[in-house]
Image (cartoon, rainbow, N blue to C red; front, side, top):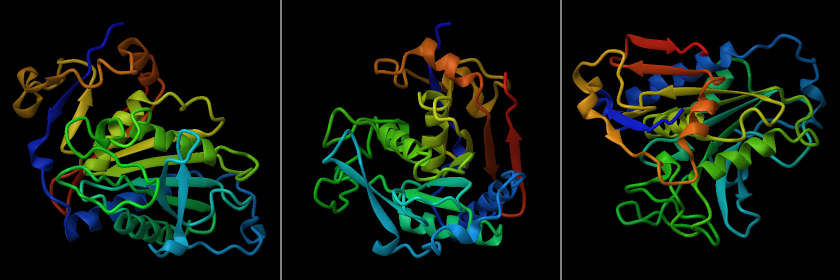
Length: 293
């Protein structure tokens, strides 16, 4: 099967992050956390060496993740250390920020959702930070911190790092998944949810389709895509070819020329089960759970 990956624009979702969207994102995450199966969990929450979740978006709750063997690194906020053994953790939530690259706000939202779902004690919540010194973003980076592109083939689409051409933004999440699947650190972790809102939804949609670590970890991975302004699609075919779904609105060539081969992409998509959430108002949302093929 030879797939040419296209994307199409959902104009109704092209809105900047605001307080109402954060509230919607919070409610979405509550649904995600509550939907995670708790059956069979050992009652060992208190056995994690007395560790309490770290829930403030401060340096105390952050950690550097080395990429490509180092010294290149990117930062995450997390409720528990990614290197200290923690048998109390059974699940993980990775929350990807939007276009403003404000991982601190998304960490607060995600930890709030975990609290309301009574899941803070057995869930490690992680908010990765895709900062960029690129023109138009101009983030202030720390020593050896990876600079991700914020234009063109950007971090949203698995784009190549500006500071290390051997790294893509997908490599960052790959490394997080490997860390979470390490039984020496999280011996009882069984479920990982990767969720993204707005530009983060664009990232998760494409990462779900293209990553090569899902299925190799011994841990179940699921994906939640919320309110992206564009969607990746295998070709120009549309189930409902109207408005933004018209074939002529498809933008061809996403990642065709890179390490992601179209045939391999098609095979990887088959067993994966993304949940797509599109909110058009604050009082009503449409949730489409795509069944496995």
